[in-house]
Length: 115
Length: 114
Image (cartoon, rainbow over all chains, first blue to last red; front, side, top):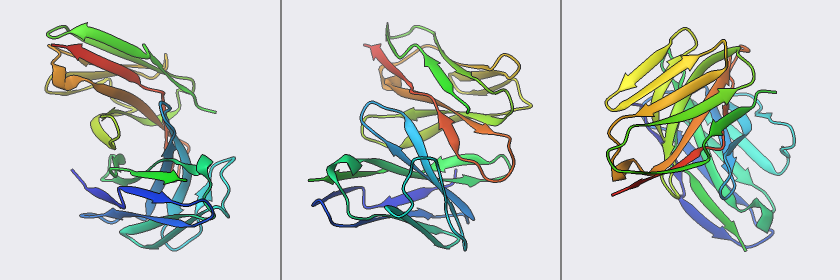
């Protein structure tokens, strides 16, 4: 199956700083990628749809100025959490659809802890 | 808004038993449905994908069914093993056109006792 990677896998940052998370499709091209957030013992919630070469589409309640998404190439999308606060601590996972069946392939996730 | 519900929230059974996990969704206009496995602190592993036109998919000891009209899917696990212990997530993609993300259920936390 297709492989999606994320970097870093874990990051700890201080409140007020910004953190960038990368999502890469390793063996296929993805014009669209998705970013999800998962709080402890909760399910995944879609945050935004990342579109190659155009602006991201954000879900209701997600601050676009806080969660900056850039999809500069067909294999890379980045999520930047700006001015991070402790409540932003979460597990962030990206996915990309592949193949004609539009199966979603997920990255391994990034654990963000804001102190 | 599409809602996905999974029952039970948690399940603990002895090794060797067959078991069924349930998923229901409120809007039957789906494009496909995917079952995932998530181990603690890890990402998602795709188990089975069912297109809206399909009734079931099988992979090894796993069988997933889809009844779009009633808004239900089941994941059947045969001859369960301790290594099957994980959280199982059901997710639905709308058929609204364009690129849509998935709507997830809260998952079923499964423990297989050795």
